Length: 169
Image 1 (tube, rainbow, N blue to C red):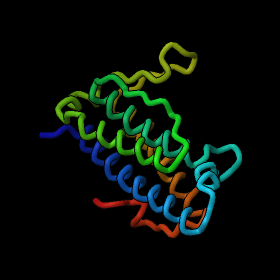
Image 2: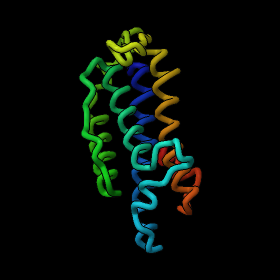
Image 3: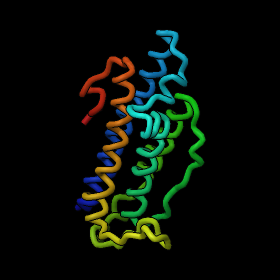
């Protein structure tokens, strides 16, 4: 039997990141078709103190990789975060999806009780069980950034809806 920790993480991340990848491609095509400078969308924010689109996508991908790796007891893959174009975001999402495909579901066995330490060695260090980490921290963080990326593009005129957000399931 496949671990519930795997079932409730990796397939969800893959579904949502595949949908986000399609939305990013639509945004790229929209910018070209409407003669919009791509940076106008890539740097768009919902509010001045929030991350721009490019960072929302980066953080969503970071959470998908980080959560999956930690729950599987693997080293968290780290990328530079220097994406600056729609093509760069597409490549980041492609690499992240490839990583998720490479994670063996059996590694998640016992993940619900695995100790997850956030911000180790800092004053903000926090220890959580794998179950709490996934349900109460990781998934909400991941969905926040995916949703915010969607919202930024929708707010800026991209004709997308719930089907685009959800992707195939």
